[in-house]
Length: 315
Image 1 (tube, helix red, strand yellow):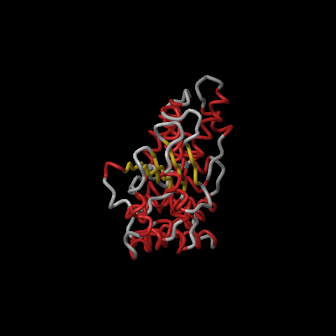
Image 2: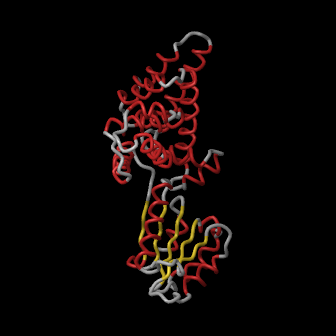
Image 3: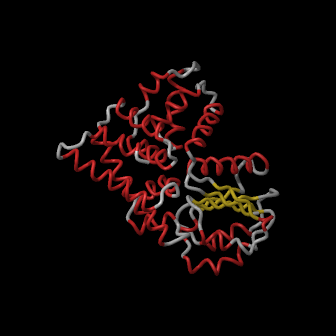
């Protein structure tokens, strides 16, 4: 059996990996004697040697491989293809990747579908983030109202790693009681970059009311209009570059695009879900508006706050 866990939401994919390992130990191997990890530098041949060896005094063994695509070169995948079929029934081979891999996808095309299980964890949409956070709070037995959930997302953005961490801080502060709005104001820092991502997402969804709410929240948090306009202009530039790249090279991997364009992978993955909500011409128009506003503010001809609201009203 081969299990492939992947996706840009690495927090959720990591949680799935932990769940698989925990379930295996509980069912087959409490002592962990048949649990083998390959995480950093390793030879692919070592994986198959471990996978084909018989379990030690157990019915099953689990071999966990992280970031195989970072170790195997593209030209080597063809040589590995026959080896997947050699994985015996008593071995559970788990492959964890931070993103979907075309090389792995192609390698598995010759495998019977019943022998491969996929767990995909793409970046969550704003609505999915909200539902995920509500469920996460319930799992942690945290008493948080929907209004508190919304307030936390507005403060933090859509980073599932940080949202989970902030929940733990708020749980400790509440000490078994309901989380109050002032706890969030006291403990959680607003991140400008994440909120501008959300702002751009609302622009793409044609939701001006929600976009304006993000601007107002950032202003109340102490950020000034110039700061916000500068960050917005930078993010629009990155979105435009990625949108143009993906249009010119259909099917390109977002990580490859980020590498070619010199964009940080984290920023590229955050932007990925926004890309299809704009076409290139629309992005160029909004980006030019942001550039003109920046110049207008610096020359005293434009009020920065009014300029930001104009961008929203023009979508």
